[in-house]
Image 1 (tube, rainbow, N blue to C red):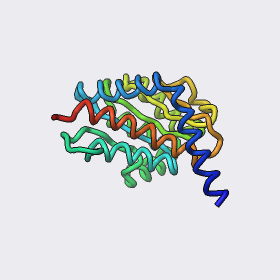
Image 2: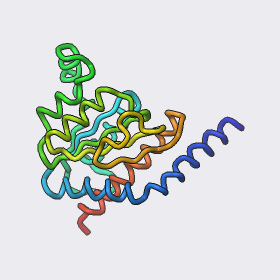
Image 3: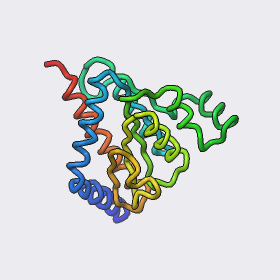
Image 4: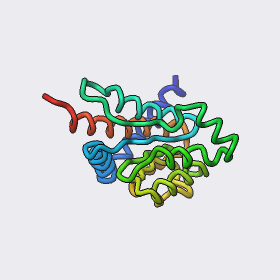
Length: 188
């Protein structure tokens, strides 16, 4: 019982600590809404559990979050195993995302990166490629942000040390972003 209560307490504590980042979160929400209202798309990426968060965000934009509204353009760069394995085989795993951004990204799009450490080279290369192409970059990071800290146009660093707690906080962040999008596009 103590382990369960401790896990819940640590998760709640870390999520509550993100309130200090409300202004940054608001800017991220506005950037995603602005992109979509201008006809751009949202691209998402991450590794491991963060890949699941990237998938979650994209499917909620294309499908729906809470209520029906028009489908919005979003691509999870982790979703196509043929692209991932082709690029990894031909160019190396570090390039699985930047290569897709080069082919799919356009100026005015948004790239949302999920990383619990900020250490992934493939995400850093994706961030750099996106910036070179005029794609707005958003990083949802953990720990101290690693090498990715300060590199994206917008960022939130969840200052936890446990990967699972950071991922739980990232879930809250992506739901806040989705809620802002839904409010901007909901009719009625």
